[in-house]
Length: 157
Image (cartoon, helix red, strand yellow):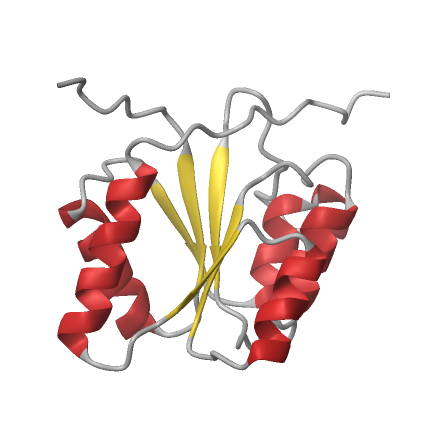
């Protein structure tokens, strides 16, 4: 049996609930994800992280040496997940970054809207602790074998 190939990439988790963030981190690791996880807790932090022209210190657009996968909650303070998703997929520098929406909503209009905006996957957070943990572990198993595109470095004219 072939061993899974763990591609080096950063998981960028955009999640405002500290309990959910801790549970997601722990269960991704239980699912085999040993990749670095960067936690952003507001929409503004997410925009600043990916788009340096916003002027925040430490912000950057991941380049070919920093492939990433975004795990995006929709219900964020200040700038919602729909807008974050729209911005990521509308910009040539970030449109190839895989985005998995991980949120509490299961409304069909929200799901359709996320896919129309370009998300690569949509997962509703289960309500119960065990179901939530199990779903995240399964997502972690998928991430251990997923291949992530390299993001072209278009920042230099």
